[in-house]
Image (tube, rainbow, N blue to C red; front, side, top):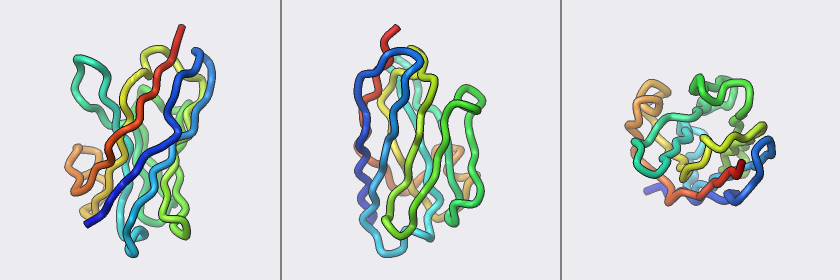
Length: 124
């Protein structure tokens, strides 16, 4: 069982930045591909970013490419999502997810473990 706890959400003006963190309670964190998803009111959950188990490879949705960066610190069992140049359309609840099946599974939204989410609100 893996518990994921996100933090770092909040209210920010358009053009601002936020850094989300997701702490994992597992001794085998380095075995997991980690992903970030978001869900806006009335919309389906969508893939945002993912990072390979080693942290070497990252993947992004087109909508955030060039603005968001995901990284991980396996020594701290933590994955990060740095969000820059935020737009009102980035407003959503952001979730982190973990899975050992690989990036394709995570990008498809098929993850074994999910966090509770953290709210990000971008004002115009």
